[in-house]
Length: 425
Image (cartoon, rainbow, N blue to C red; front, side, top):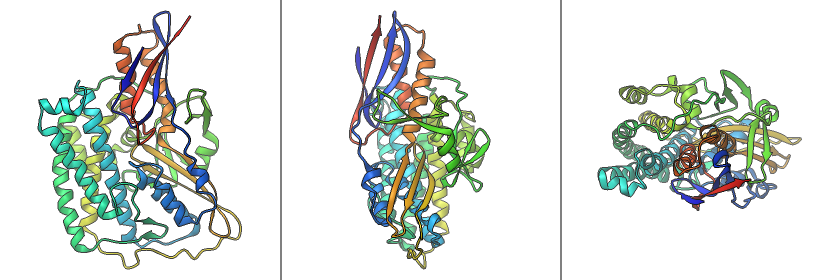
């Protein structure tokens, strides 16, 4: 039995293993060909690496560029102008709004509302599609102004930005943000009125970037189960990569055994208290509070959209053009230096480990993506829900719903996921 799963970003399959008419196991197969970015980056100048890695993903290219820039700056002691850094923060927030808006309102909302697509949902509520596109358009406008273009931004550099905006442009963007915030709250109210497609209590550890200054965006430490970890401690000793036969993507498990969750769900449950007032009030008005479960991840995304827009409003209210948009990298390393950093991409913790040579060119690069970290949890959760249940169309729908809830970014070009049933005798 095969079925097509839409409403996800990428190419792969959800495989349901059946024995004697009941579900035994569910896993998510990734068939995308390797892209070799970690190898392509070797031997290149650091700024070229930043630009190159922004091409890894069309939806979260800013996160990759910011990851590399921050890692190199921290490693080489580069001081970035505060206002230039705030522009990069704003660009990162705009990317979060765009990614979440696309997923929540065009992919997840039809699914939780029981519609086959956003077009069918829009036929019942004509304003939904128009307002969704308005919100996505506002995020794109912000990314074009701050990043040079709406996809794969080109304005993030080691030491700052290439081209800052002026005060007039900042005022124009403030009006865009204010309008987008109203739309986000209106659409968010609609989304929060729906019940999730599935509910499953999960005791899996939730991993997010550690933050002591508000909602997490990037940093050099991680938070899991109330404990802070250094990047080298977590990815060097706790999280272990596993090569599964059914997948061209690595899977990550704690000590190679236990799956864990990254992304909006982890950030929300770990840092709900740090959300802006507007986001918390919207949640409270609809009776939502932490902890939210994997099937309720759209609640976290709605909260993050509103929170990001409020933070963007604050950033532009206080904006002044930077006096030094981009610092020059003058540091010289006498021996290879290891640079690590983590950024909260829209889908979760994005970790980078870079080794820089004495000529300030990249010797080695290791990237751990959010989806690679969530794949094991996706399969485990779907298996827990369906194991022992009769194989049926409803079981297939639940397996699809788990994938949609996690919003995996497998590939940015293909938007279908096949379902395959394997019968064991």
